Length: 210
Figure: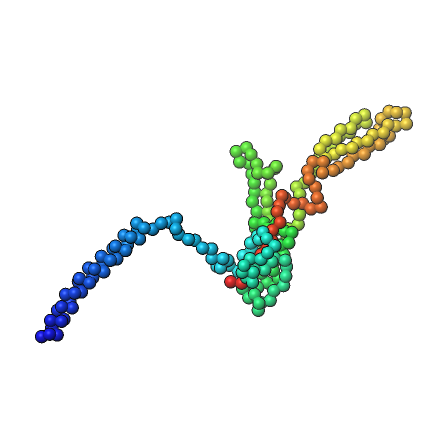
């Protein structure tokens, strides 16, 4: 008899316990929805974890990242399959050598007139070399015309410095005058021993380990 009464008493408590539990959960949810302050959320950087092996980044400092053991400088150095198996599978036995290089998107793109304007000075097609290869430097062709009569010479732009000398009788005659024409691109544009755009030096690093 006592066992039956205990059983009925316990079964009667179950609905009450469920009611109390549901009420507590509802109260907690209400508090979360009203007390949550997005300004108090702290976002923490996770470092370089999750960056795929072979990813190249531009690093602006001479110092190394905190996880320096996971990165190599893109200077052509040799690597082994045992030390860097994942990177070896991507680039082979040598890290790319990007010293002094500009990286360029692979493929080609034609720039044509759009609403009467063009991209750049003229309509051009920009094309990269084969993926992973070095494309040599180049400039678009420069051409011009130099006009000269036996009494007058004219230069413009990159042409300059005509020096005429008369013939023996002081007159300019066919086959007798002497003229010097010079070409100097620096009179029009900045020049150097290489072709380059405006730039700022960085170090290229490649992800070497997961």
